[in-house]
Amino acid sequence: MELVFLLICGGVAVIASLLVIFARSTLHSALWMVLSFFMIAVVYVLLQAQFLAMLQVIVYAGAIMMFIIYAIMMLNLRQESRQKTGARISKIIGVGSLIVLFLELMLVSLGNNLTPIPGPVSEKLVATYGRMAVISNFLFSDYLLPFEVVSILLTAGVVGAVVLAKRER
Image (tube, rainbow, N blue to C red; front, side, top):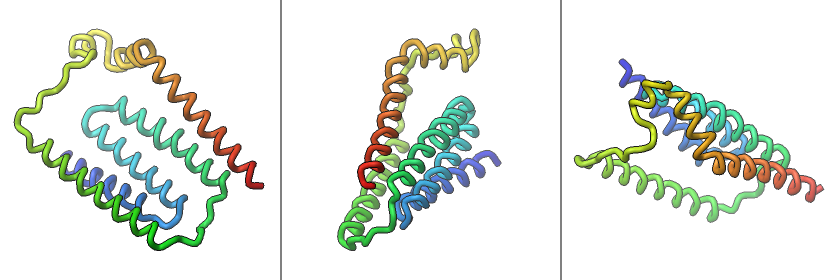
């Protein structure tokens, strides 16, 4: 039963991701992306990765999508007159990239000698301190600089969107 639910949620995530590409409205595309992020979070829960599911919902479906929708509304993106050739070429490139990615994933999944790369988190650490404590320790000690750089980049993106929106008026 869990496998069926996993396949259904994965399928909905793939369909929502395709609708992100093929949606005519920018806002609709962003909303399909939110659905895709939520379905990926459900897949994480089914794979017993509750911390990743929580981060997926809070960071991607919450904060990042709020910034994207805020930027869309600040820039006041309307339906411009579309150039048929540019839109058609970009869709062909997107579908071609999707097919190449699918073939690569199938090639990797059919490999017999896949071994996991050992990381800093071991089962002994998780059993001793708990999964949340170990992940948060690595996030806020070893990976503090990338964490802060991402927050600065997100802030710069919002400031850039506001500057672009103010310049047109």
